[in-house]
Image (cartoon, rainbow, N blue to C red; front, top):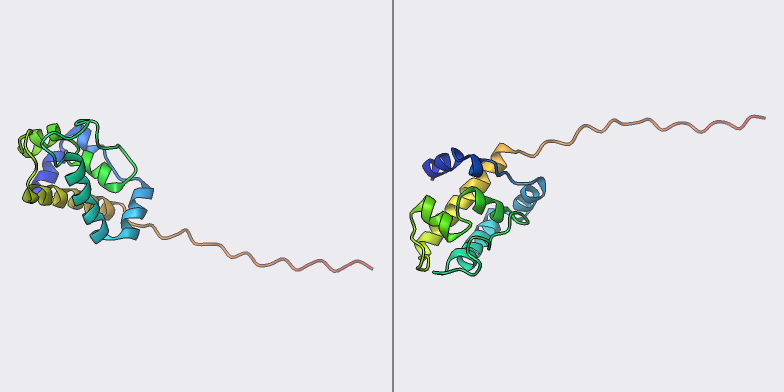
Amino acid sequence: MAETLERLSRSQFRAKFVLTDKDRAYARAKGKETIDRHAHEMLRDRVGAAEPKNDGRQTPWRGHPVFTAQHATATCCRGCIEKWHHIPKGRPLTDEEVNRLADLVMAWIERDLVNHPIHPAHPVHTVQPVQPARPVR
């Protein structure tokens, strides 16, 4: 897994992908188990068929952490999967292949989350309340 991520990071195109703050917050809020389930579902539904509908254009560029991770890990279409992962086009992905690709997507998401930790909020400066002025008599 680490070797594949390293190889992908040497691609100028693949290396430019990072999660948005919104996607990071979503991934953290949903948790690893849910995002992993989403990765499996999206890979199976979008690229799992022998000839996926709109192959090459079926994975959105944003809107879910898995989508970004698919582009970063070359699991976004069957052409990229064939080129980078040597899984031939023209036949459905096996459960083992979906699991392996989902593991790669999850490893990429986890690495992005580690590389972009939650920053503590800036300290809030406490302002002392202003005493109301006394009426002048």
